[in-house]
Image 1 (tube, rainbow, N blue to C red):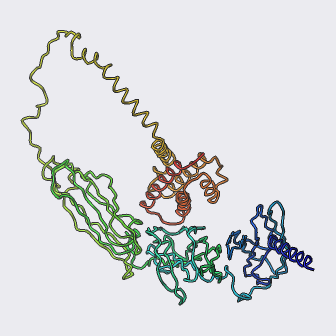
Image 2 (image 1 turned 120 degrees about the horizontal axis):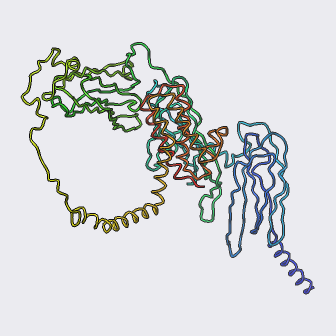
Length: 592
């Protein structure tokens, strides 16, 4: 009996050890029944590490997350506990009863399979059946909001859109989030406000306490009237959701859920500026401005120069309208103005000053009037048009030749004929004395020219060495050479557009043609193949920076938009400068 008892104990211990060493590989779902608008989590768990994991084909579901891998390897009371899990998040495609087939894995040379799992998908439900899963919690606790400061502005009145990401205190976000879709403002002049660091702030969302960060701030100036749509900002983020379980140290165990959040599209209703009371010389200025015309001096001599400055200061769309022109008498020589901008853009819009500085050179003596200049703008506070007129300025030319009768008609100094007084030096240009030189031929040997020609080869040797070293240094500067080549290429393709500055239709046709010809030369694609998506894909494939690609696409969109909207010379110059800079950047970044 004793022998039988010992054999029984040995068999029991052997069976226990075999049971402990048995491999487990199984599939577990978060729920057996769910609505078509719900999410299903399926975990493939194993108690030993394996290789070559092959998931089933989720034919009746869309994989919205995963695979996420988690690993637990602990020792409790001297016993090792191991668990490895592959997790997927599934969205059902339709209603019905579906079977998720087997998954396989290789452990110690053996292939193991899970049992098929059957789930039932019902019609959409208002509330999930049973407790919400991690994906549902993430959807309820993460919100991306676009806050628009003014949804009903006037044409060229600034409005601000601020993108905020609200996160509940119950969940967290990992650092590997990214922008999936960046908003474009096709019918607006836009300026992004720089954000230094993502500072976490406290606030409320629908009456609940949330944390939030400001992701983007953009100032918009609408360039068309009517209902204009803002494209949404879309983010891909990973949400950390508590599982309700704790580890051996009592800390909450978190699970990661992929989530796509969007701010949703917003519509801004842009009002046209009123026609009643609109001045005939109105150039599109909207805001609150001061206007003045000044000169560097009012008294000078003929052929000296002075500067006349037309300046607008204040708050408004300073970069989006033209300054009035300077009118001067024809007897004054006036050069093309130098345009200067000192404008900063904040959440309230643009503020600062713009100016045109003319160089004026009088040719004759006299007094020359610069007539008053008017500047009109639409005041947003009173919603009326206002006009500012400068004072008349008199330019007094005190010394210099007297203008002829025809030229003097434009001056205030004289409208009568001038008496011609004979001068005693009338024939002073005729020489009455001689300066004879000897005709004796000088010897070339040992002359100054002789020594110069003799020493010239010796001086040329170090000069040639310096030039050669400079060329070698320039050739070795790969970055500099690429920059110079890119700048030459930009000038080559944009030369025709530059000639047409000031003529809207011709300018934007030639600018668009230049952009297309550039891409045809660099990317080897035909004009018939052109579309924004293909251009964006090809440039991205060539490792061009995303920001540069976005700028290039925005220039193409500006060319299209210009056919239907009024465009100022300032805007054309800005588009030309942006195109030249973008072509140069693309050429530097393109990888063959």
